[in-house]
Image (cartoon, rainbow, N blue to C red):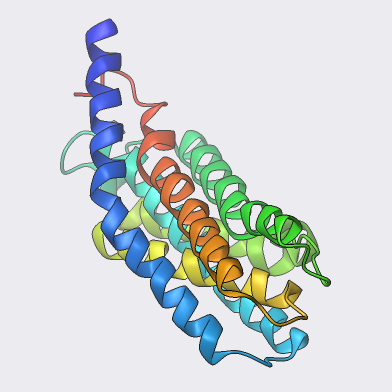
Length: 213
């Protein structure tokens, strides 16, 4: 057991290290988009957030579920539905809704509080637009059940998560930002994506895999 835990910790740190450059790139694209979006109406930012956030939940559910299925089911048999569907659903739903909410809403909101943005407000998609966000989580789990692939969807997951977090912040701005504010926003965009997305895609589903090699 200690050896298994040690191997898993090494793998987790390796994944986090590998994802630093790409996550920094994503955060940099967020700052560029923010500069180009100056003066964007709050309602427009809200609408864009509710395009990106549900899409993020879809990709997160797909990756999280696929990772669990690939590591649980016999090679070549996961498409035949050999894994535990109820466990797949619970892990896919909790890993996508829970961590996507943390990434897109909770961490950006903490940044908004720190910067004392005038229109700061936390938007919890699975409650606020439950009829949109929850079905997309279920769709992602269903796709993973029949087509468990991860590479493309994880790369997309990182970028979409960055931009969803960004537009949550843009909704709250309501004032001119200083250079130091942009630096703080960059840090929060990085943190909002780097740890939650890696935890969601790799760490969380593997916690439920027995005898994982």
